[in-house]
Image 1 (tube, rainbow, N blue to C red):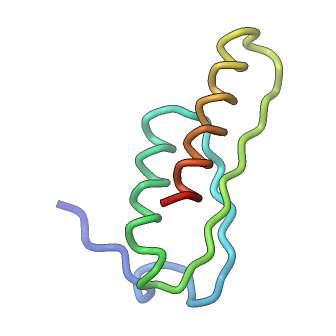
Image 2: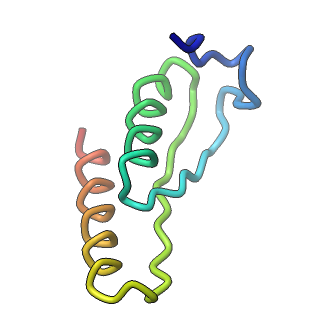
Length: 77
């Protein structure tokens, strides 16, 4: 099991604004959910960033729509 994410184990400090690149894949969504769980205790301000490169046609459109909906849900919660 991995050690818990704490300010002492990261470069993150209270009050930092963190832009998290979210592709829509399982790894980036898991990282977003993990950071959301600790952000209040760590005093972080999170932003979700997604780059649509336009090279995967409809799949890229679907990823962008998923990340946009996820970010909206996170903002409401």
